[in-house]
Image (cartoon, rainbow, N blue to C red; front, top):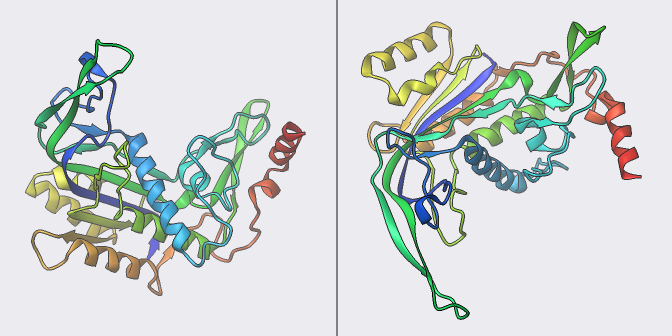
Length: 315
């Protein structure tokens, strides 16, 4: 099977949490993010933050990591060949010439949203001051308990690859792909993505708070097309669920369901089967540059003007 996209949709229980605090509303020390329908949510930005932290830890433990690393979120470079955040998460570097300096992220996420309207509690906080007798009183919001629905998708077409558009007189006259990493490294990064979605834990804004987003139910889809339709699976009716799975079967996509509450396949077993399927002989990741690792270039080699700009600014 030639894999063009990997979708992971899951349900994760969270209790007594403020997984993504918002503005300080009504004098609160911290307010939880809520939709107009009363369901709490975790922003896509926070979901990416948590996922890349998980990828970073897994990469550090990988004996095959080489010189790769995960850059900090506020200092993303363009060295796709070594910076996993630059590759998977994209970047925006304004520039001139054929290359715009913008990389569309192969990795995309949705905000995590509670399945039902949330019960919000408030902790009373008293800020004591030795300099002022008027001590500040505030409340800290938290959600009592939610089943959070979250989705992740990896576009294999763009993994470790740059798509370059050529222009003439302000008109696009074509495009081509440049490969920056080997097929073995593309496979390794895909495995990191898979495993990281099972270990989502960096939600709390204070180290002493423990908030887990690890899945209780999961659907993993290895797709032959670019599709995210299965992301609706856990919020769909039984009829729609059956139709979604039937559509996947019809186009020869491979899916794995895991459930820690019922059935014979746990979440851990589902992830283990997913890794085995990904690395099985006969399965491969789609590569727009071909399958033979020809003409691999670093970002600086592919775009020397970008490297010279960086050197000039350093001087």
